Image (tube, rainbow, N blue to C red; front, side, top):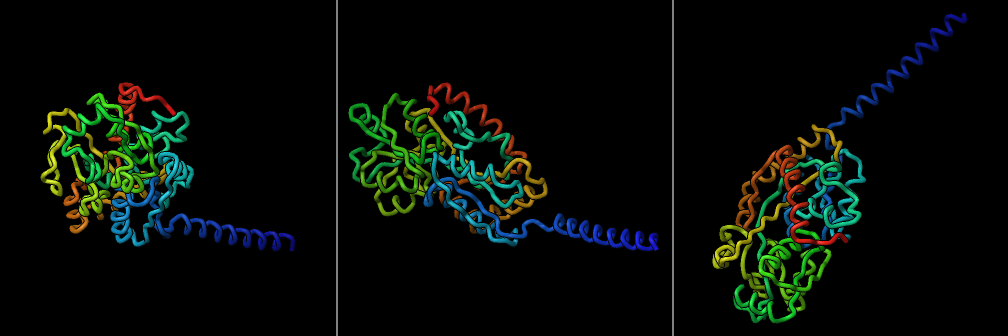
Length: 325
């Protein structure tokens, strides 16, 4: 009797164990994504990063079969949103949208709270685009030459979406190139800074064409120059800095990353979805018409780009002698 009871107990235990293993295996095999994916934009709504992320998110959702939601988490010069993604599970459901500031902020902050290469891995670029240097339509400077002459005599200012972000660095590099000293006015994103530039409260800003579009079309802002090596399609009459004899250019990249440790197959699914979005005829045409280059690159290519840029940013901060905050 005892042997029969023992055998019965063992059989029941094995059944329960088998059910547990099967359930675990079923959960592990749950295809990604099985719920909505969130793209964190660490800046206020309305800026170039936010606009492009929303356009791309919609198309990525079509490929993934799940909603891809954009979540604006502005603050701390983009550090708030970036740290939140770093601390999220490495499961691919929380993605970070960022720009050039991603690689330079750790060089500018005493406690950035993240390492771009150790804490994150790339998905790919959404787009590359130049900046447009803009002033209010009422600004007395008719062109860049007059602006520079005025800046050498008057106390002017420049807006940016936070210290160390791409708009800030683009402006600082230009000012250093020309030996100008303008007062920096940081905001939680270029989107909230544009109205102050349009009304003349702040003198100038470096911004992408896409996020400045409503102000440019309405005539509230006027472009002085673009940071690309060639003029952009939507602003054929706006010269480049290089055309004006200034040895200065700057490219803004907008990309997607996730936590390091995210499964490779999940990174690949996100990469495939990004490629699907960028190859969409309408989205591609729109980005190009707005002065952007939506060329797709693979995750490993983006990681190599990030590694190269980290090295370059260390040198740039040293050359510009920007103190850590």
